[in-house]
Image (cartoon, rainbow, N blue to C red; front, side, top):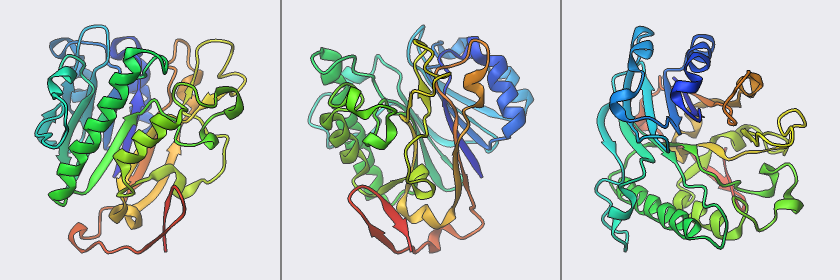
Amino acid sequence: MLVATWNVNSIRTRLSQILDWINQSNPDILCLQETKVMDDSFPTEPFEKLGYSVEVYGQKSYNGVAIISKIKPENVKKGFYGCNDFNQNIDIFLDQKRLISADINGIKIINVYVPNGSSLESNKFEYKINWLNCLASFLDDLEKKGELICLMGDFNVAPSNLDIHDPKKYEGGIMASEIERNALNNVLKKRLIDSFRIFEQNTGYWSWWDYRNNAFELNKGWRIDHVYISKELSSNLKSCVIDSSPRGNPRPSDHAPVMIDLNLSDNLNDINVEFFEDEDNFFEI
């Protein structure tokens, strides 16, 4: 099962590029972020013609997430439903459409668009950390239910200095601060693993390049788009790739798709994988 995530930075602007990529890559599930369109204006028909069902949670001009799937999603939920342990009123997160989830093939697919935060001194940064804390509580509830999880999207956080082309230049700044990394680690709680780092331990791999200063042409990027899976699924994970080719299109999104291949032929109820761990990552043995 091929599962992909892509911040498309406007579904209507990139529609032809997205359809071309689907025809080339043939994902079973594609999670989109920053769709920037109301639900009733989302272009569902072109995806349905390709055999996909479409679930959306959007708003005008900003944010917005969608799950496009060959397999009909079940139990589709929008936002932080049932988030019981978070100590702040989750109503503050209702206006921004940033999370959609569904059950597909026995896995809880969770698509997120984490707030950018603007700068460490802004109110938007406080909102970002609170949002991540609410996501952690949301996952705590799912963990108690024994859900197998695939959490993906644009996290607007580089997990380590390996994920930034010039870490010294951006050290301690937005998307690279210790506060954000700690908040992300609190979301993961070592129950979820970074699919990409299962296969690649080195730096030099990016999923986002600023539109400014020829960042893509100079390969000055960040890895801020991630696919995290329950550690129990590690033995089912066959690959994780960042496809940078769409970033070279005319008028591209500033993000590239990230895709994993999960072999679900095994009985998910019988998964039993042992791990050893380093400071930040789990590895299958």
